[in-house]
Image 1: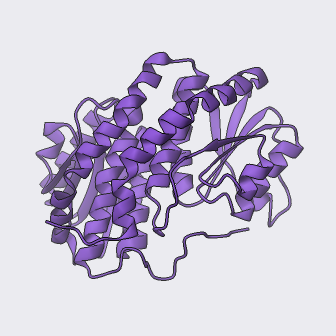
Image 2: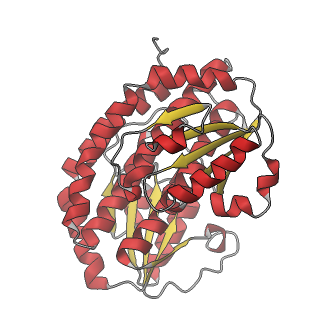
Length: 349
């Protein structure tokens, strides 16, 4: 099956190369930023982001919390802009994550952090951006120009940038070495893209679904839901599996689509038990996993490579979700590069 050309397709397929560029070209710079953070010794981290970058920030909450033992808060940018009441950022490491580096509210958070004496880092794909200009340090994504409105390669490179920073800050050589396998894992998934696109045709008449993840893949549930909403106009609602059990689980009935990310690791048993309940209710299950037990429960299994550490699985598990969204966009007859009402750069205050 030959997929029609689009910026979205090209940029999904380019992700192995984009990750390799970041690993190769930013390694030494990340070490310099990590050394500056160790000297500063932050008490906590505040991450400012919007949209896709906000989903990367959710991943950062788990990374820096688990491996660096730092509490991580997601910024509330309207406090800095609309309400003009910025919180006290004494002792904080303030990180702004933005592919374009242009949104005024994200810039305002980082600018205020620096004004208050906090250490500031910009994670961006635009060296010349306002965000890069106000931060003390910049971590450049090396993703290349992203022309698709729906972000893909800037999402996975943002995840990788945060993972590199966390592992380097912890001086964890084992974790740093594990990053090198990512381009190969993503290449293996992209080789399966025609199969995933065909699988998406089953859902061409779907109007709603939920996406589930937990732990590190809480971010993945949000990011796949965002891609489905902005490209296919499906009302896709993301949840932690724990939150989903507290009420929204009542949605699940015969034929209701549930997309679940089930990585190898601590959260797998809980997610598999929940999927078994859904199967009893005759729900329509789409499962992204390397675990045979999880994949066997799905009407649409989307396998990922085995052996991916749970902390790195969001960089791998999101790719079948991206390809599924592309396939469903095509199945519904929409234009992948022209989602209605959206522009590449969104400026919020």
